[in-house]
Image 1: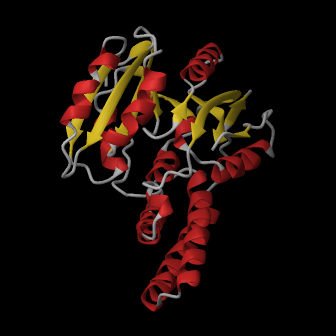
Image 2: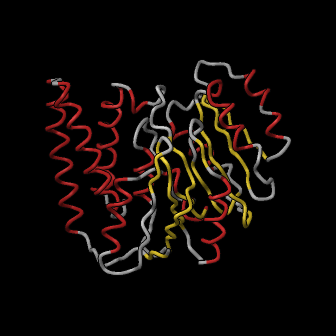
Length: 295
């Protein structure tokens, strides 16, 4: 991955280009071609998006647009395809049905470069309701508070990450929670993290086409918990991994209890044992390494 200094690569997967194109155009048309590139990963599956792809010419006139077409079946595979094409020094992962704020993101990245940070994490909106990233000063308790904050608000779309940090990291090919597994695989231990009050993103949690709003989410989360527990047991995650695992497991268990599915309840017992093993494994690891937080 050869990177260009100052350039931000937007990796943007979509499997509903027919529904998302107009929303993408609302923010993409204003981007500066010297500062941004868009890698649009179109998961076509059995659909033909040729008419929508033809309409992208109006965006291509103002910004470098790299279109990757294929059948990926999950956002993890689509994002991995985008990573291989990214030329920017910084990478962001946005969703095609949300409203990012490129200007605020640019300001945050400029400040991160000035502070020599490797990761920048911004504030955000959920359905237009503000969620500010808390200001932190580096101390003994900061790391635990920061980890808990990121666990409760793990959206990858609020992260800007130096490209060099993700050269050797790949998204698992999962349908749900793949971004949390991805974050847990990044080595934060020797990196500076900028926490910013710039509102960089407006997340739409009400999208009816989102997997999180379907019953399929339970089965998808089952696979993610299993994947993350295996990664933890093999020593491949950072401290965020255990917190993500606990949060996902609690969400999954509650959904299963309400559905009262006997087969899934049996599966829950098997996963519970694996989750407990992975958490014990985490407890036995050294906790001496700290996150370097700046604000």
